[in-house]
Image (cartoon, rainbow, N blue to C red; front, top):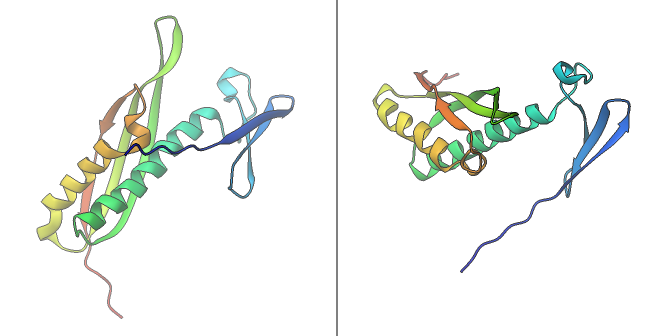
Length: 149
């Protein structure tokens, strides 16, 4: 049985070097521009930010799913995503994406399992798997006992 899903977004220029993007069945719009390095407006989302945000949000959601399936109790998951753009074959492209997840777990004895979940989440993250960029993982797993009141 083939599973297929379709998602839709719509972008358009509004004024000067600014545009808006919205998504089907998603509330709100996001103002964006080209990066200031390419003549765009400062302090706005850029397509480059969107790509990195897609990787980061997919990673966090995937981690939660993998942790749940693995019965790993965790306190928090955060990820910083950085992308390196370089000129290759005559054009600019993302050549490396650095994923720096930080998972906080409750018990030290779960550290090895947590690291396996962190790594598996990167391997099965749909957005990251769809890119040709090299993904560089720099994970951290921290232990923090639950706070009791």
